[in-house]
Image (cartoon, rainbow, N blue to C red; front, side, top):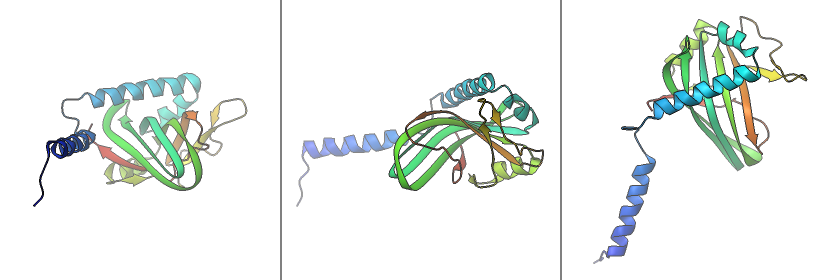
Length: 186
């Protein structure tokens, strides 16, 4: 017959509390307002640092803003962030971005990124999917030697244009390939 002690009871209660706290459902929080504030700050930063990105945003039918993605790895790595999809500069949905990786890697990095949906089909596919994965079909806008963001092959036919910016940390590279985006309710 096993006997429970106060110490084991308190330990189990503490573990249960920690587990349920980690699974917060967002009720009674202002998570949506925090995400929107971070999106506004990231958007302002991108447009102030790279004014030419306003042209791409103006052509986009919708933009997914991920203001803070944290990526870390020690042979096995992962990344996570939350953001908002905006259409006509109004938030219509919130999304999380998750990524897993395996290989020679060590370090941590934080960065922001935006996905500009240029075609109706790309935006519709993204919004209808249960979990959209970024793949090789992304066209990246990259910094040129003068520090400007450019995408030499950007045309009206590119369905999604990705911009990674604001990198800080010691992990080299911030690719979005393999990143899964899932609609969330903050």
